[in-house]
Length: 218
Length: 230
Image 1 (tube, chains in turn purple, brown):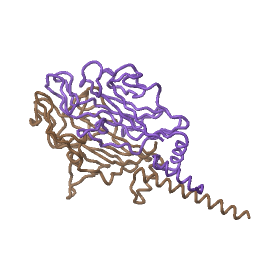
Image 2: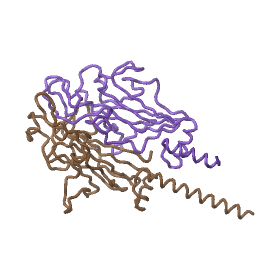
Image 3: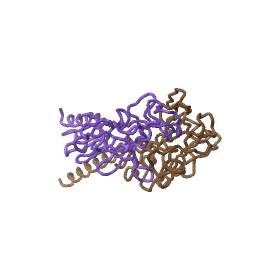
Image 4: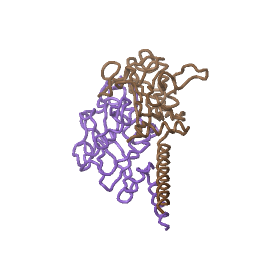
């Protein structure tokens, strides 16, 4: 039973070999195998003896500002870029980024008309968190990835005109996932808890183990 | 996945005209009418969806948080069917929760202006003075809406306090809710009947209670069968 994290930065090149550029704005990119930013070698999936609980997701925040900024050079608002040339700001500082969870082929976050949406705005769940940008979203209930399922975290950003042409630089667009990986016997217990309608978390897994031990008269 | 955390963010940003479906690249802020409630789903300003938000017969929605931009007197109201949730003490209409009480984003300023050198704010970092407790329930078959309104114009041509003439301020609203679907929606209804708060913990508690009852009944039946066989 292990707490795990994954951080994605659009400017890194681990495994993917390619930094994200303005051209990728508007498309949902997998932070694991999307081909831009730091990637891993294969899609995230649970084996038959694993159970994954996604507990938090966050992405670079944005701020709502003015659509016309007469600054003559690249300007920023609270550390976020507002335009890449004079007078081109759209009204957003930052990337206007969203983060979606996908289990197998199903998007987790939907619009009220039942259409998959972009996910959680970075403005609601910012990464990194700061005094200027604090969360008003927590992922509760957690998202369960059952044994044998493939899961993905996908980032969509829309405000390419806030960034200079070319590759993004470190910190321009980042995403963070926190999850707990249950393996082996703990994954079996996690499945059992799920059947019983009990939230899967380390406390309840420990409680189930104690119950088993007590029932054996130890 | 029959009990899911959901979010919806609205902003007065559009790539064409005053509104667009979903979102688009480099959308720009549009002027929003003053003192008029705008549906964040189908209000024809900013990003919209295809139809009003409604629950089906097998859905139950619990609205847990809402927030709005703290600028220009922004506020957000919840409407269930035709009834506004937030009312004045004399039961008259009001705008709802002010953005200054539930700011979006948390930590934002309550005053921002455009200038020749960029965006300037007053350095305030607002925190929320409001929490939506108790939550708002949208029962199966109901239509619900979130409506944004503002007391002052977000267009600097009208509201010169915003700074550079010709600039339009982007404003936003946010709602966080949990969607209960299928069996979990039935349990949510049952909890409502019982007077128990509908939240994921209590839905899980009700499931456990059902399982325990079934296990006890099965044990009793087995014991009775064993007794009859002797």
